[in-house]
Image (cartoon, rainbow, N blue to C red):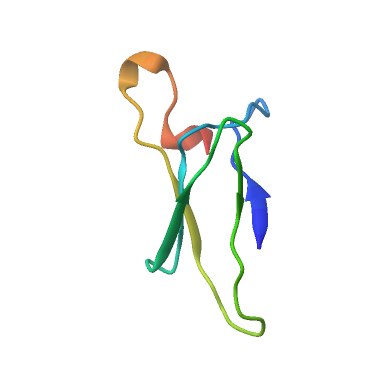
Length: 63
């Protein structure tokens, strides 16, 4: 599975953490993309998060 973590304005988010079922995680690079090789025919929960200070204007709402 792969995807892009971006703001509502479509700007990619660098350093967002993408978690799969609490077992696997990755941090996005400047392009905001992530990719995991996962088994087929399984259920997964993908959870993005961003630990950003309030001064920079980005919140998890932007995810």
